[in-house]
Length: 485
Image (cartoon, rainbow, N blue to C red; front, side, top):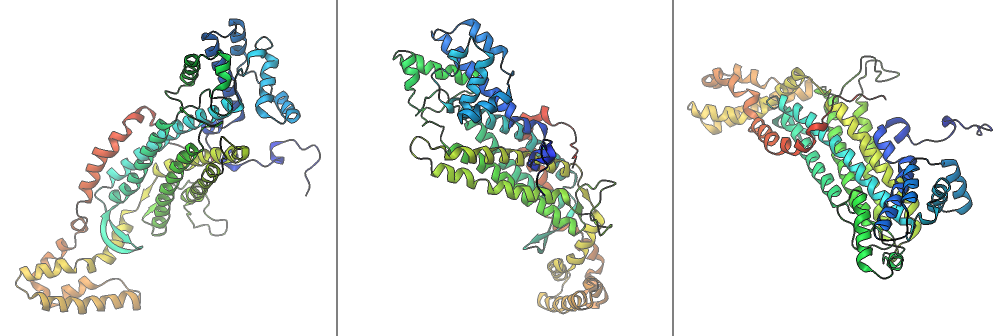
């Protein structure tokens, strides 16, 4: 089918599902055209204010005119200008000048396109990280509450996805939390390391500004400092080409890709546990798991997280390749790529964190199913304890070992060949050889005696590492999150 003539509605054009279906309004706004071009205008204002304060002939009237039109953006005119000029920055210079005729002559004075382009990107990256950090802290907080609640509940551990020694539900959750705490630290570091590009000129030498200030190096340095401060940054990069180093993008997206890996691992575990019917993600009253199989309760939230986390992890390849092919002071083949990968990385991270928060706030645990699986495997794990108890009761270690070997293989045959339950303990109870310890069997098979220091590890970890890391975000913990889709 062709596109209907004159079709202008949103449904007639492709829209990224990252925005149309999943992402939160705040992150979508950060990467919006309105925010981008509004920031450009603010950067032009900062530049004019700083240049005026350092003695350039810019009037109060020009500054006030710019201030009054920061959000008065004629997007239709800008689009027409860009189509005519084939240059997005100059299109918006002309559009801003149209509504600021008195200030037209000093807009973008001494600057290059990257003054607004790169500095806006750095502001957007900073704001994006500042939005993600409390989101991640909320997920950690919800999982910490879950880990604390189930710190003592024994569960079967798995290595190679084969039954292993017992752990607890809370301790397993702490493995997830530890990875997310590492991501929190990495996101904080990436944000704190971000600097402003500042006013550097076409190839980073500040030559145009040095000319404006008639060779006064101190005024050029002060101009850079003032604009950096107005934009909310403490430092600017001391050296740049035309752009800030694209390795900055690598640093940011590598941290987000690492977060994607953490979320993928967590949600994969939840999906596997859902298959075992031990833990499930939230399931709405009217939710449908399958159009064909009404009984199904598919872990669709966890599956969504895994799906989008894979996308997030792959995006790191874009800045890696972009940085590697930036010739000398810059090439423009970074631009179109960065328009896509930077926004998609933050939008995707926003989505998986909001979804994981929803999951973590509604995890359902089935202790009886967990206990049943433990009972199926625990008898074999208890054999060493049984041997020790028999020796203490006066038995011979080698004789006891042989008795247990025979009985355990008989029980294994019932499980594997007949599909029955593990009857090893029943065989021990029925064998007169083990009569000296028959009364001890219940205590020897107490699951809590097989979890080691798991409960103590949970308590110590949450108290000493997790809760302190969340203190800066205490005021942003918020309420429960609901998913619209």
